Figure 1 (cartoon, rainbow, N blue to C red):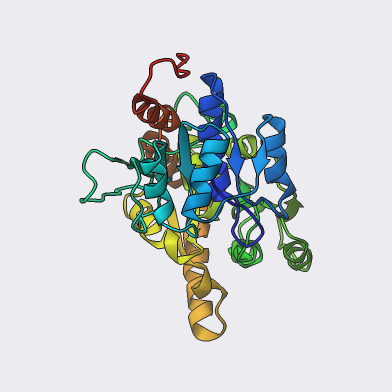
Figure 2 (cartoon, rainbow, N blue to C red):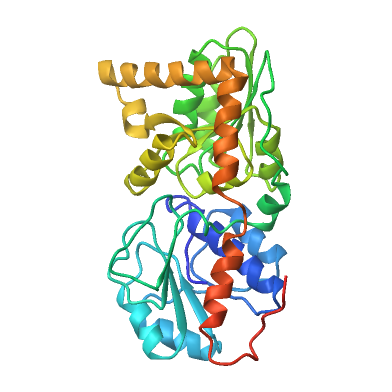
Length: 348
């Protein structure tokens, strides 16, 4: 696996690669990570807990090939917006099966297989080489194990439990913005916010909840799937965690945090899989435009907090969208490309 994680990059690339790593480990394969994981202790622990080594991340195509040969790799997964796109083709030419994980743009990579796990993803120029759509999200063991057997029914809650998290590091400071919007609804709630940065925690500490409202910041945790399934409403970013929320059947309201989330965000909102709160820059803006964007988001959240039926409708559509078997389908595809049946294919 070749990916990076950090305070500004976030941990989305690493989390989905980790899910695929768990699948290969379960089948008896050897897995190694290559990349930079800095300033995110939680992410490093995920690798250490699974006994997966982390090596420096090769940048140039020739260095990727050299690393693949040095470590005797059969498959190399590339999950990065920053690597030289020529790396995939160089690996293929060297006989290494190569998967490029993409989000809309292949960046000109010449991979054996492309994975775009976003709703409605299509790449017309890649027939037979593309795994696209919500049959393929890469989800960790902890998420799949917590998937309920059926969507949750409407559940009245006078004081709903709300969980807010925005990736492993909240690189763009969404938590204080959305916490203010949530509290501004005036609706009673128990609000738990996952906080990965000291400056974000300080901003949250300055907020004053209203009558019947409570705000509790917590650090990044391995118990996130359990917190999601226990929440009456989840507020999050429209990144890779979208598919975790769907698999868990969580009623969710999402915010588009960065440009590369925009297309997927609009698709899942249009399909009624999640509620849409808008884009973070607009919600954080000063003046009349910012106040209007925040007021719109608060109205959406107030309606969800007051209506168990609305929350249940989102939960049904989300749960039906992602079944949790995406990583198995991806692993099957990659193993089928290996030249020898002697490679590990332990049945699940």
